[in-house]
Length: 273
Image (cartoon, rainbow, N blue to C red; front, side, top):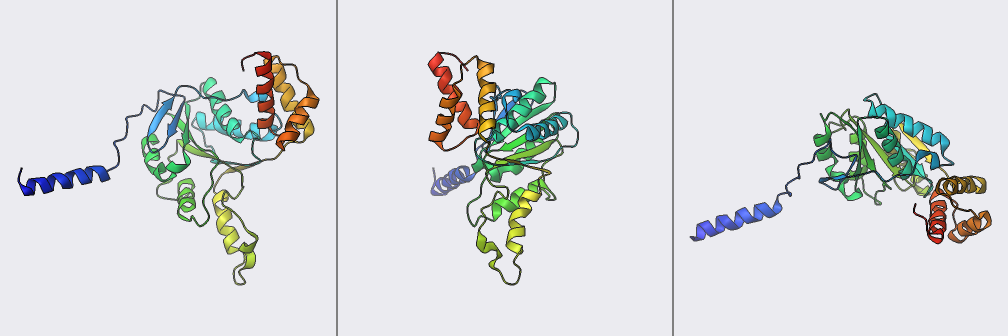
């Protein structure tokens, strides 16, 4: 091989290393759910609790399930922001609503996007556009680093008004601990000229969602009602005093805390969940 041929070979190898990996062919009709990490893979089943077991969030449950049912039928539906307290069923409600819509015959699939794959959403939308199916693209526990302006602006563009906005058969569902998604500070209003500009810019992202639903920590009665529902469903004996002590030790009353206690009870009783 001549020197020139060796040089061309090295250049070809370098270009091959720089090029993105080939995208796997994905059958967007075959699975109830998918994971997108820059590439797609099907998931055989959606892991979600029965909707009836999600207690203390009745209003949110009604709104989300109705919106997902509309999307599954190809009707106008909203992008959704589910924000608020940890462990109060935001993610579970998204999964359970899609599962219910599928059981009712809706042509819909759930696509969970990993947080490090947000930059590749445009490629995902290209693949979903024109499919004979509707998709709820789901980003769990979304947050942006301090000073990150690119990510939030891309998301705004995808939600509304951008040339790369999601196609008509796709809607976004995002969960976050904050309504604004972005971190907020009291110093935002210190600008003597335009004290609202920084605040408005951060809230603009949340305002692009057609639905923004808050999830708040449950009180003691709601926590016990969640536990009673689980205990009845799985045939477990519930000691409410022990359940309250369990929550006290963990510093939170929530649906997630309740589920952890039910897991403990089932393990003791030798029962499957």
